[in-house]
Amino acid sequence: MIKSISIITPLGKNAIAFDKEQKQKIVLDIAQLNIKEYNSFDIEITFTVPISEFRNHDYTWVKFNVDRVANTFSPKILKLQNNMLVQFYCGDLTQNCLLR
Image (cartoon, rainbow, N blue to C red; front, side):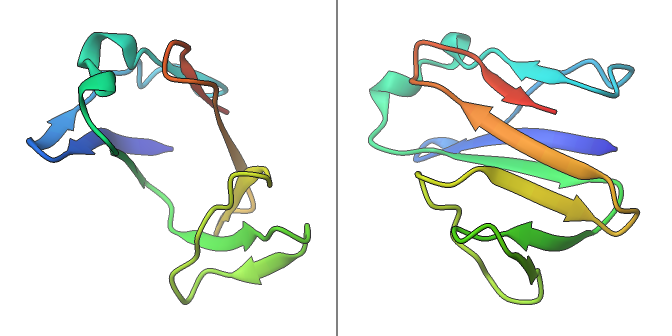
């Protein structure tokens, strides 16, 4: 399901190692990346199956044919073309991020 995960900071793009055999849940340990040194960072996740829909802030499914912003106050849920749902949760920067 997941092809690659990268953290993008002002200093560049860093690939994150993860267990590709774990199909149901992946935990990213971002504590080792010294993220607190940056004002912002992006997490780039590449899936093996294309994304078809995104659950919007009003809990409706919208097509993924234009750029979307994942609002802080709504769950980040994607639907892949094979109908698999992917949910992303990240606590504060002292915690791990969870992708399931």
